Image 1 (cartoon, one colour):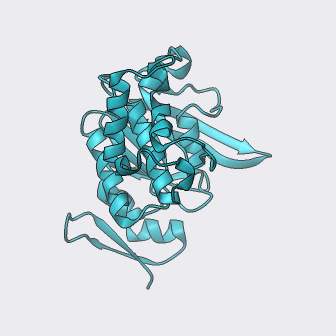
Image 2: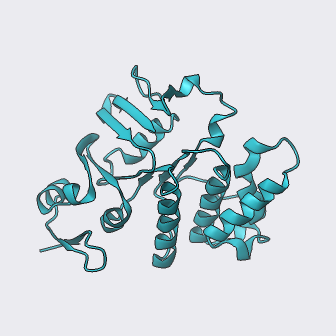
Length: 258
């Protein structure tokens, strides 16, 4: 689905990413984890073609981003970012409808309205569809923008790609799990998701592959049980931990502290 080689990035001579190789398969959920300042969000932006990534091209469905028709590309890939405007004088429905802008010129079609309703239901914001966006809490706004991204990719195209930068911020436990189940269901249809998370246990539970970064370099890129070991996690986070098996699903369960 996506392949990138030798991604490097520096700002004012400070190295943020160094020689990163990433390959993500169709139908895969890749979770990027690492301490603060590891370069997770920068890597996600570069993979999404939002930043210059050096001389080596990034290929998406075996084509470079430059080879894609820029009107067609938003139908195949979308990105959820951490930073969104705090002042949007629109209703929730209107904000989610932004995700459908690539599909119509002035007036949305019925398919656009259906896509918006479906995505709002998936993110549990349908009940607030007529509310002013500016009256929402941080977690509610987060879910509205997730609905917008999901609405953008609601089409009959096979093998779509979504980038999500810390989509669980401000969400309670219930909605964290609901959103991750929605993302997992998306990948089980043959689509791909690349997600930045801070919660290692949620990464262990939902990821097919985990990419662990530290100071702009890949420490490990493998299945969760290969990445989340006592030795690797204690060293990367500079804090002792214990690894046991989650009794519910047998995934690694990380407990920090002595």
